[in-house]
Amino acid sequence: MKTIHPDPPYEKPIPHPDNRFMALTSNCTDMPTLFVDTHVPLDILTDAANYRIRTVTQVLENLSMRGSIECESFILSDFALLCAITLRDGCDVLDVVGRRLRGRPTAAA
Image 1 (cartoon, rainbow, N blue to C red):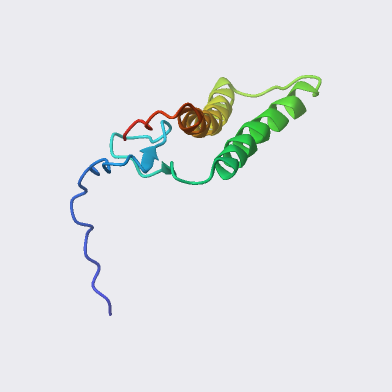
Image 2: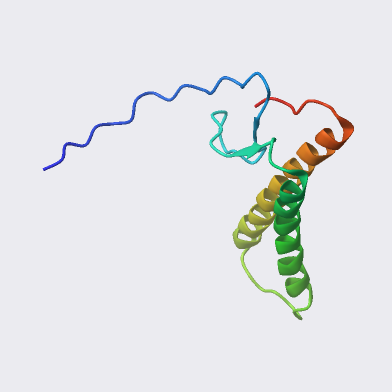
């Protein structure tokens, strides 16, 4: 039978000198696990941001077409957080695109 060993202590990543990987704002702790590769071609970064923003837009448009929505406030709060995380990811990627277009270095994690 396999022995299960606990993970070693996590060390916060040291930002790479060329700022290749930028932590997403939506990371839930100060030890990020989700990053944007800032060296990806601009069209792919734009597509990734566009996908996230349009996904939330479509969901919100569908909700707005309903007559009334009855639910508990905590459900609305969770739903708003879900939308906010996805929109924030899209905005983070657009920030990388904007910095690259302006020729500025990408912020480090």
